[in-house]
Amino acid sequence: MDIILLTPFDLGLAASLVILLAIFSEYGRLKLGIGRKLVIAAVRASVQLMAIGLVLKVLFESNHPLLMMLMATVMLLMATREIAARQEMGFVGWWGFAIGGLSLLLSSFLITLFALTVILSPTPWYTPQYAIPLLGMLLGNTMNGIALALDRLTREVVRERGAIEARLLMGHSWQMAIQPYMREAIRAGTIPIINTMAVSGVVTLPGMMTGQILAGNPPGTASNYQIMILFLIAAGTGFGISAGVWLASRRFFDERQRLRLDRLKKRA
Amino acid sequence: MARLVVESVTTVLGFPLSLTVEPGECLGLSGASGSGKSLFLRALADLDPHQGKVCLGEMECANTAPDQWRRLVGLLPAESAWWGAQVQDHFDPSPACLFLFEQLGFSATTLTQPVQQLSSGERQRLAIIRTLSVNPRALLLDEPTANLDKTSAERVEKLIAHYRETQQIPVIWVSHDPQQIKRVAHQHWHLQNGRLQRAQPTDQRG
Image (cartoon, rainbow over all chains, first blue to last red):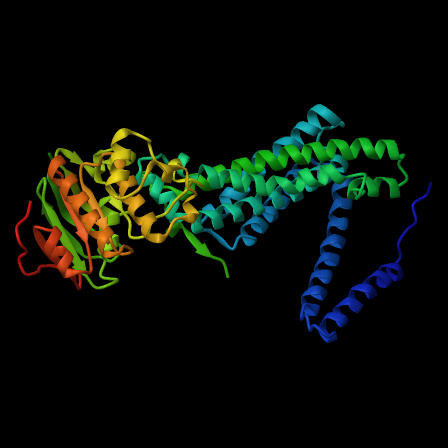
């Protein structure tokens, strides 16, 4: 089965729907005022995706480990920045980035490495055709989970400052004082992937599987890949969130086990 | 029996404060809102970074494990806060604790009540019991009777006085009510523009 190639005209047709939505949101009854944002986001997505198409083309052709590493680093940095940007309040200084970056590194990177070397084992193991999509899917999902969990943790800690300090005053350790909010945050971050797994194949056909089927692969192969990806994402999200929440919790307290909300700042 | 010695303790507000409270003595502290009374007490309990030295008897804050120090100095914040659903989640149900319950007009059934159903006055009184329940060797009270009616406030005053006398511990009592300070404290200091000034001498009690 040959894949149907998309022409610029085809993309234009799809774009016309977005433009229609933008017009509707600007001039419709509700005056949503998100038309501009929508168009900017759509243009951004197009430019980014076309650029990545070109980058991947070069990457696939060269198959060079150094280029791969560079690409992976750029992806990690972008995801790290995104986590920081999604927090209403973040830690001041480089900690604001380090927590997200370190958690992504510990989860997405290690799990991608595991999948490449143990499960899939392409030759060489860093074959970009496998490594980049895997890392991309893992980073994207763990990034969402970590951002969600960190945002939740920060809100809870700020809101429950009195209760946390009341426990410190009773002689409880910082771990005991913050534990309920850590649990809340980890739960909030992992629920989306649990829900996704629960409905995939029934309500939704996940993106990767859709892509493989569109590309002409047998549905059975597509399912297997999708199952593996879901498991990797679940593990990556869970471990990444746990690492991130722990690091952030640690950072909330200083060496005298004081709750240091002065280490937070509101993001613009 | 330990004396509380505070030497040049400086909070984020930037001015150093020093004072000494003898065992069994109560120091009344007043001052306008925002003068730094609460921040001062928080620094003494090591809840905020600060400079200076705080000693309780032989123990010095900087050389004592933070959890141990906080149990020793017993800070009661102006606003009580709760982490569990029920009252009993916050206490050790020791006989001493149940005795305190009775003293402040609660019964054992209060233990199983949801915290959210309590009035602010009840919560305030329970917070006092919670602070006393870890057997502190000093008390730092930030407006302990602010949310209470007259009868409850008197009960609290009596309970604290009893605890202070029998345990011979130093107490710092922040209050906006000069009459109350007169009743409960041996010395009265007023915090204004970053300086502690001795207010008119109060009756000696205790």
